[in-house]
Structures are given as C-alpha cells and as structure tokens.
Length: 302
Ligand SMILES: [Mn+2]
Image (tube, rainbow, N blue to C red):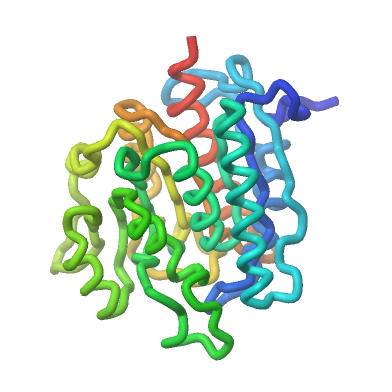
C-alpha cells in the first residue's frame, strides 16, 4: 500500500483533518462541497512528505487522520446549514476535548462558524486571535443584500462575524472586496478587528509579515484560510475569485512566521471548488494544509 500523509485510521490520531462537505450558502460559483475529496487525493498521492523549508517529515512525528462528516448539504435550506454548522461545532469541540488538533477542510466558509463555536467551548475567545486570510471580510450581518434565497447570518459572507461577537480577536489579511456595512463594522470594532487590506492605495506593496504577526496580541491563534485570499493565479478554482491577492511565497512566509511564534489551536481551509482538467487549487490547498500541520504542530513536538 502506498504511503499517504493520512497515516492513521483515527483511534490514536493527534491531528484530525475533518472533511466538511457543504456548499449551501456560497454566493456565486458553486462546488465547494467537492473540495475535501479533491484535496484528499492530493494529500494521498501528490504532496511531498518532506516539507521543504524545515526539512521536517510531519508524518514521522504525528498521527494524522481523516474524518469525513459526509454530505452536509441536505436540501440546502437554512435549516440544513444550521445543522451542518452544528455538526462541525460538536465534532470540533469533541476533538479538542480529546487533545487532538483539528483542521477543518471545507466546504464553504460557513464551516468556520461551526469550528469557532467548537473552539470557543474549550478556549476563552478573548485569549484567541483568528488569523484570517480572505479576499473578503466575511463580516456581513446576513446575506439578504445579494442573495435571492437568504441564509441569514449563517451564510459564508458572515463567517467571521459571530466569532467577533463571541469575543474572538480577528486579524484579516488580503481583504480587497467588501461592503460599506462591513467597513463600518471594522471601524466600530477596532479593538477586536484588525484588517490588512490589499491594494487600497496606488502601487500597493504587502507589509512585511512581521507587521501582521505583531498585530496578533494573543499567544493562541486559530487559522482560517479562504483560498480566495490568495491571488487567483495560485487558487483559481474558487467560487468568488478576486484578482490581486496574497502571493504564494508571501502566504508561506506569513503562515510560517505565525506558526513559529504562536500556539495554533486549530485551523480551517475553505472554498476550494474543483473544476475539470485543473488540479492547481486543490494541490496548493493540500500543500498549505500540510505546511501548517508541519510548522504549527510537528515542528514543536518533542
Ligand atoms: Mn471567506
């Protein structure tokens, strides 16, 4: 049997990759519910075991399992979305309680709502900062302004708002498409929300990653990656692409710096919507997941 990064069938696992197959509330391009399966194939067959920057082989240090939550779409009603979020929350809290590291593999970004409910049951939200890479703030109150069939405050465009309301700190990076309402929310919540927006002035250059890492004031960090935060050159297969996002190696630098400095309590990566004859996005997503596992958890295991 060929070796896979998924090297445990569960019982003794230290890291749980949890497949959250839902795409109920995405607002434009569909297909994020097929993301986990495509990412899994890359983890099984394509990603190198040796992380190139540290030389660490995470699978030699950690037992990593895959837990598929099954089809979470149901009949794609708001009730189903609430159920999906609840399922993610319960499973996330149980894994943390059992001492496991959780990495949610989405699915649309509403999965973060569930994951952070689960994290908030184990950790004081005031002691946790969400490092949020995304083209969008995801701070809408609800999706009624653009959605014909509103999913209310559970939609993927609201992914970060309940967490801020619950008391988590938020550092958003790469934001470059947002509503007036979200802008006002950021201004009104400056104590909890810091935004590093991309391209808001002429000849924009991204800040050194140390500036962003310095903006994280807590030791505990939860990482949420919406792949549309990266430039679509690297992450083309996603429902709401926006040009001019994080560069590939810049994203590595940022994630590596934060993983090195901080204690990562959990993570998610969402919004991979695979498309035919193109594996770049799921491959890059799988690579980022494996990098975070290596830098945040394997590198610190002794
Ligand atoms: Mn998002």
